[in-house]
Length: 123
Image 1 (cartoon, helix red, strand yellow):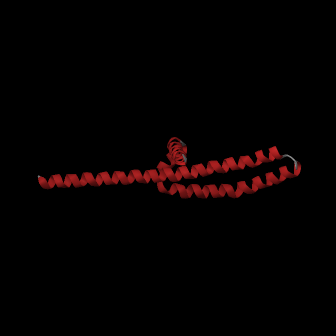
Image 2 (cartoon, rainbow, N blue to C red):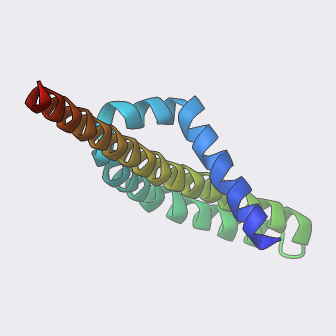
Image 3 (cartoon, rainbow, N blue to C red):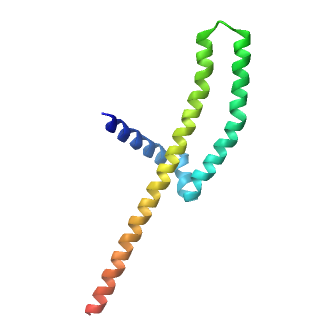
């Protein structure tokens, strides 16, 4: 059962990477994308996490007994961080798929070249 879920998640990540702007960006920039995306994410989180912590503290001071609002206040950063993690994994997945396709292409080109060389020797 867990294997099916893993396959579905990988398939969804690949589809998102192919269809979105991120997928197009990966095709243009190639293998540099994961490093670039991780650096951008780290810069974002350096500013985002302290800001959310301040919001959390302000909310806790204003409403000390409010648990539902606190949960919603914590849920927003979790969702945003989850989206970033999905994008990072989809970027790595797209780059790996691109590398795999490039290897297959090179392999078929080598086979074609070898076949043409063998045919030229026979003639």
